[in-house]
Amino acid sequence: MYSAFRGVLRGLMGFPIEQPMESIKTQWQANPSKTSEVAIMKSIYKEKGIYKGFFAGSLPNAGRVVVKNLYRYPVMIGMPIQIENTMRRMGMKASENKQL
Image (cartoon, rainbow, N blue to C red; front, side):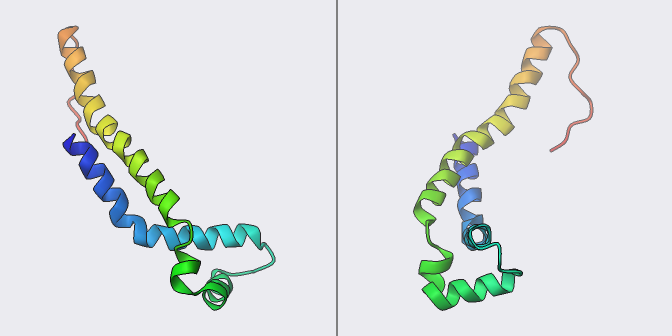
């Protein structure tokens, strides 16, 4: 449970940086005639402003981030421990090279 909380917290901490990047990417895909990120950023800011432009679609994206990190981190932390315990019960030697 603690690792799930850490995963959600990690996902939400990066969200204020990730969401504007997603908006820029989406606008670039919708308008391939624009040639640079700067042109797209200027266009978004001029047409919609900061919050409605760069943070449009934040709620569904935040929900996706929370759900993804809610299961992802327990699996990443819990699975190696479970595999190591299973290997010990089977009499196999766990790897000496642990990456943390």
